[in-house]
Length: 230
Image 1 (cartoon, rainbow, N blue to C red):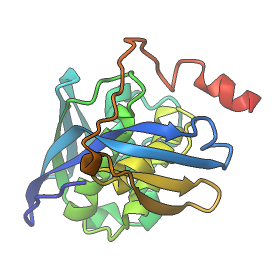
Image 2: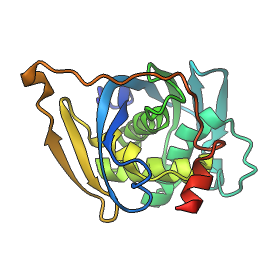
Image 3: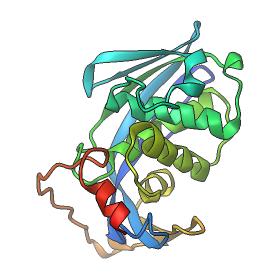
Image 4: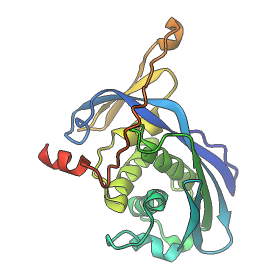
């Protein structure tokens, strides 16, 4: 997470992740050892003078606008009509308001503009990166006071309940807590974490992640069936 914000505007980013140990063990409350990668999603955000959250992205030429007053109940029904890409950041806003019990009448509207170099659908958690960037921006601009782990939880809630992808919390924790040349050990039962030095830089080594060019979607692929079978 790299916040570079002022009081009313700024740019935030969060990385994608790759995984050393543990895949479907995260939602089975096991151990995982992911690490953040150099590719990131960025959001430039600013407060508005009206009561609207405006979301734009290089993912889609059509921006999405939602009135602030609609946010607390926006994803209470699966028939919300929000495009999937916009459901990630708007879902984070919805989840953050629920987690903090914040009164939207006290909040400013926001402009959020996203760009990313995390490959989409490649297993590098592009979704967690957009969630992490959005959560970090909202936390600062709305003064929510959430910790990095709390922000990871809002990302998971957004992905599970707003987007409809039944993921665990590994991706969001790796994105929010990852640091250079280190992996993040996570006990998915207790959510206890430990940053583990990898030592690759000192040894002159690099870990190569190979793009197989196979695309997937947690929301519409076989992920839900795999979780149900587990």
